[in-house]
Figure 1 (tube, one colour):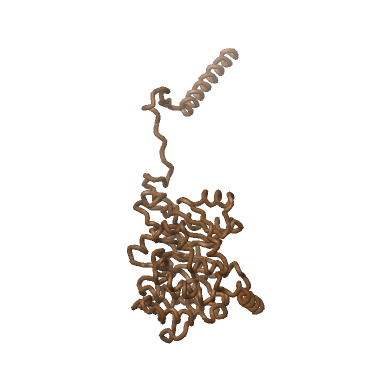
Figure 2 (cartoon, rainbow, N blue to C red; figure 1 turned 120 degrees about the vertical axis):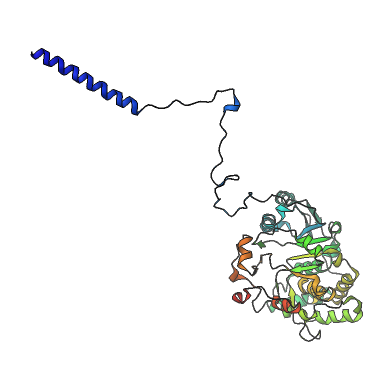
Length: 400
């Protein structure tokens, strides 16, 4: 009897084990996969794009356009234009910063040429590094000695005494000879360099500048299509001590050449009394986009030659900014001068940050609007608006 009971327990235990094994095997079974057949490409499943990629209906978390990023290069013909920079080999690592800003914000889309000018030969390192950064062609020119030296009608002893006096008065660049050569060259010769004769339009770029916003249109084409000949982004009052007789020299020129002064000019920008005196306002010329044919015109060349023989580049410290500005204000019609509010720009120590939050956001600007110099009391931009009967940008009051 005891053997029979033991036998039944073994049978029951075995049945229970079989039932447990059945449930375990049922719950852990894996359906067979349909693996692709190697050598048969049509059966390989296509990889799926990640979420947010182009073609996916899921909205992207970035503000890129619905159809992806814009093309790397803008479509359409290019103008006969170039960037131009006056620099020395020692300026290399400061000018490359400027090039990166210009290329990233504008020229990578348009691939315009870049002309570099120097009073000495550019070395191989300067050429190699700048060529690698510029999307257009790079050209390197040496300034003729006669354009970077004292002309024979200048009394160099008198010029030296002036430099000593300005040094004692601590006038910025007051004792610098090279600065005077630079101002004279930018005033009257850069547009006559053989490399520049190939072009109709120029954009001046100096070392260590910054551009704060994307520029999505061709500024040169804008100038041409809107009949503009000169443009600026910053304006201010000149140091009085550097130009005590400049306006007298200008009046001597306009008296001798009244035919070069146009109607509907911008005298109101320069003078508060109809031209009797100069209020010292000028466009800051370290940024300029302009027409080279105007600078090469008889009117402008006559103007420069008259000022040059007056001697103020060396007997005082006339800058190219007031020289260019006065010429533009008197020889161009008001509507031929343009203020690029949309080009955000920095050159130590001043910043132009576009007035208008929507523009700054749309164009990925990274300037602080509180740094904007336009509506500062030392700026002449408000005067430019008044001269041209223009309405000031919305929100300018917050930046005064």
